[in-house]
Length: 121
Image (cartoon, rainbow, N blue to C red; front, side, top):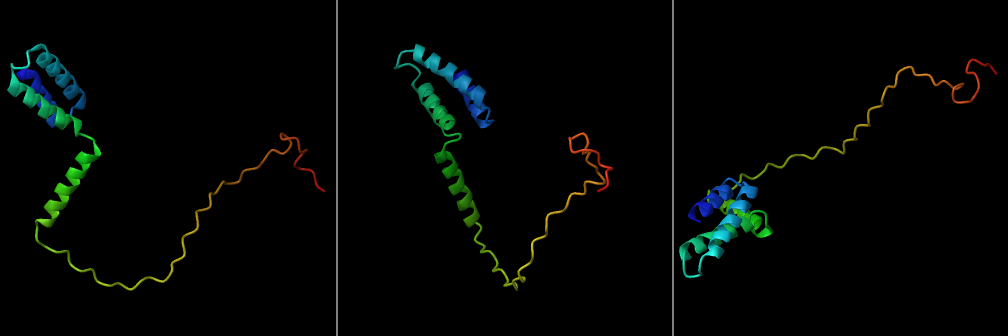
């Protein structure tokens, strides 16, 4: 049981979610087979591993990551330098789309049923 829990924790740390799911299910089966008063600490470790596994892609986990990143940025103490005012460019015209050169291609009008192409009017 301890081995299954440690395998689950290692898989969660490596973000190998399929292996973590399998290890958690094996550990759950082992803990359910034992009486409730036996292996209390292993049950607690398993519950903590389940919480870490459940929070892998949830919005709550993403929110925690964002707040940690924002706190780390503020810890530096430096303020960003003020940006210099630059003169705005006059309204620039967007570039036209490039014209595809199809080369000298001729349509066989006779094959399309329009009659011969070398006919002069």
